[in-house]
Each structure stands twice: as structure tokens, then as C-alpha cells.
Amino acid sequence: MPAQSAEIVIIGCSALLKEINALKKANDWPHVSVDAITAELHNRPEKITPAVRSSIEAAQQRGAEVFVAYGDCGTGGELDRLLEEKSVTRIAGAHCYQFFAGQQTFEAIQEQELGTFYLTDFLARHFDRLVIRGLGLDKKPALIPMFFGNYKKLMYLAQTEDIELQKAAQQAATSLGLEYDYYYTGMGDMAPAIVQFVESNARPA
Image (tube, rainbow, N blue to C red):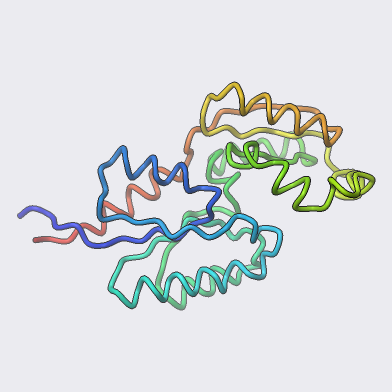
């Protein structure tokens, strides 16, 4: 008997919106929608769990299946407690750097150099807005050593092989006084996690 598509809502950080929409398009998922929560909440992680709660409750009220595209992202376990309460699953990992690189690869990178600041495609694209202006470094550049003095390297974990983003990431490293490194990840563990969830929630007709 053919499967019938149930409504699925992926609740995720807007930093992942481009990649999730690419998955939707590649897999032809008209029944999947994305509820994106602004990436600026990473500067206020205590606001992430309440925002995700609101989105989950709205989706569940209309009977949708829900998947959360977030790591713990600095919530100190609060997000996982919410997801257990709501019987909702998320991508495994502490943050997007880990699930883009893959857990084992990320752990190996961390062991190699603990003092590393990471960028993704999204952060390379919006570095000035989210990091420089977001931390007020445009007005007080003297604060850069306070925020980044313990880092040695900036590593760009790239989802695409985009020369312009590579240049932006290199410039970001220079602006912070850090060494630059590059590692191509693609979508890492995120793509199979979402595909598995969507396919496992197809309902018999």
C-alpha cells in the first residue's frame, strides 16, 4: 500500500535554513515545512528553549510531526528536557559544528587544537552582523582580545565549496588575529538524520 505524506515541521536555527531547504528541494518534500528561529539567539541561549517550545506546541496542535534541528547550543540541557517532555527528537550533537563535521571528525579536530573558533557557511556569510556587530566589536575593537584571546585558529567548516565564502572566512580570521584553516563537511550528519526522520514518518494510505 503506498505511503501517504503526513505534515512534518522541522524546527531549526535559521543558520541551517539554506541547507534544510536544499534537502526539501532535492527530495521533493512538499509536506515538510521549516519553522526557522533566528540565529541571533545564540548570543542569548537562555531564549532558545522557550522559542522552540512555542514552535513545537503550535505544530503539535495541528497534528504535525516535529523534528528539531538544533544542538544543545548552550542551553545547558534545557532543550533536551523540553524535547523529552514533548516526545520530540533532534539531531544528535552539542552544536551544528559537531553534526556538520560528524561527531568523530569533530572530536579529532578538537583534540588536535582546542583553541579553535569555528565558522559555517552561514557564519562566514554573516560574520560581521553576528560576530563583529553582535558582540559590539565594531564599536569597541579593543574587546577582541577579551573574547578571542584564548583562541589560536579559526576553522571554516564549509557546507559548500564557495570561493567567496572562503575569502570571507579568511578575512574573518585576519580580523580576529587568528590562524586560518578550512575543512569541507557538506551537510555532514544533518542530512541523513532529517531524511531518516521524514521517511520514517510516512503513513500508510
